[in-house]
Image (tube, rainbow, N blue to C red; front, top):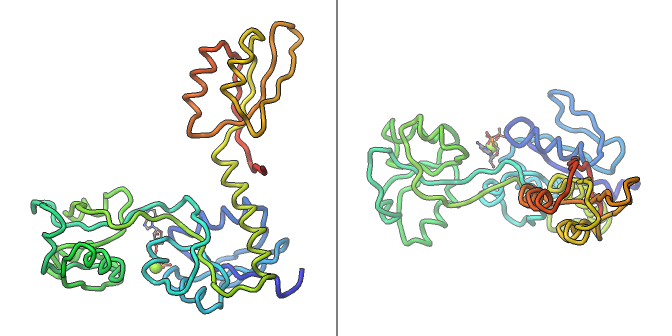
Length: 288
Ligand code: ATP
Ligand code: MG
């Protein structure tokens, strides 16, 4: 490992992205210590150094090359990001950026925001959205507690991050338009050296193996030989299923991999086709 191949990854120090970002790194087999209060840490078994920062600062650090890559929400990447690449969606910290108004006010459509005042921490994304809908509104940029703006008379509506909607509800607001669906993403500097890119490719390969494993299950079952064709057709697996004869000559054991999304549907069909003793096992990593 040469110094030139070490990449710096900026992750959120403390907040909603931190835990899942660290878990993803650990599941990718990368070992490092992140004692509380630490701002920097070098991995012990992979050419990567971590910087622990506020999420808002990460896009700029990545654009400037202080960090080579970073993990942020798409909302932050889009609001603060200039001259960065979106490298990979990570599937966690899913939320949306929405417009909301006091719940007692009837909503007729986005034109209702014409000449209104809207409080948000996302002025750039909001402006782009309003422009697209030919609505001109006054945007109040505030950095936190956006949802109290209507009740204190600062604005007539808000544009804020929503996941369950309970924060809006408890502040007497209702969600009326979704302007962005967001999840955590890896962003990258646009001028990374070839050595660093090679390290990044290795990291992405590991992350994809972990993600694929999470989306799949290993399945073992016993099948009557008379229905073997029908059952193996339901289980395409990575290449094709493993079929092993059982001591009982009328039966076989089948091993395969199935997708989490089709899981219950496939199980139902397998049972109907006479499969028995079905075992389903999680997969830690999956290399194809
Ligand atoms: P920092 O102190 O680092 O600036 P922050 O307060 O700006 O942190 P968090 O509240 O920790 O940020 O949220 C980080 C990101 O997590 C958000 O930008 C968004 O992408 C996502 N997020 C926010 N709220 C939720 C939620 N309720 N559920 C899931 N993801 C969320
Ligand atoms: Mg922040």
